[in-house]
Image (cartoon, rainbow, N blue to C red; front, side):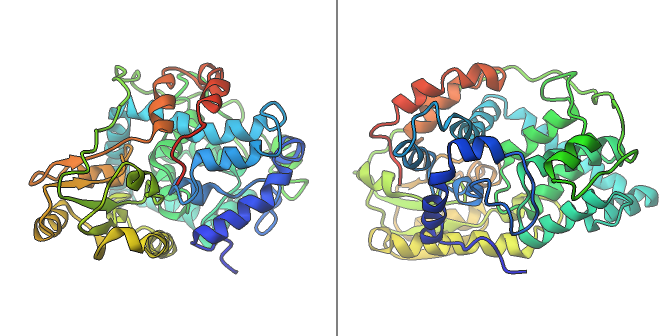
Length: 401
């Protein structure tokens, strides 16, 4: 199967341009339909590029609102802001990511010690269960690095409530195989399906819903758990203040560290940054205790290469694929830097590596888009959604690339 995602900004812009005419009425009417591999043109399929900020949220929204009013393109604009909402929510409650990681290690230990659980987990990952639609989605994910959002919800519900597998193993399966795998969106979406995010309210996949929105391709009658109870879990941790980022002093001798969460560094150069040297961070080793899919590793690496190639005139000498705090510190010292500048990395693998750097100050400027939006992610999305018109109105002049 041909890979549907070319890892370049040029390909991302072409996909955005092709989608914009469909971003209003067509998207609102058709977005819930999963028509299968190679037939996802009813949705934007921009998520692998937005997740790594090869395309930024403001430029995607600006492109759509250059053709349609906010009210006409409301559904699509809300979907872009869902990712922002999840990030803001987790930034103010980072302990939830730590809890997921602890739960994953416990579940993985159980897989290694319980032969029955291991065989059930392997069958689910290979798409070898007795549920055809689930098997199809498992294989599509592994083969293409992508799943329609509706299919992700059905898949997670079946994993948790019908197959009765630990939700953390399912979230990990997604993160290891999705091109757009995002720690906040992925972890919190799985928690939402399980009934842990909006506590006491879970999502149950229904055969009639699957049949309708796959246009009859699948109809798992009598195969799915009916009216499953939500999982029990601890209350949410206390909410912290949203981060505001660090101020950049461009007069200091700086090196630039690029990572998977922001591959459009032009806004840092607009702040006056002139790096002595640039390196890229490969944080895939922090994604999972298991092996991340090679195609995901190749995709992220190619995105990094595309970024450094496009911005080479501003980067100085380039070092690719540093993987640890120690390597970063040695590289920065060798370059003669007084500080390491890097775009703010939200909770996840890149931030985990950055948090271990001790030898030099790490300056993490935060984009205005995130600084404005994240503080509103205090409760559910409905409350956050009310702020979208204000946030869109404030986007003029924000850093986009």
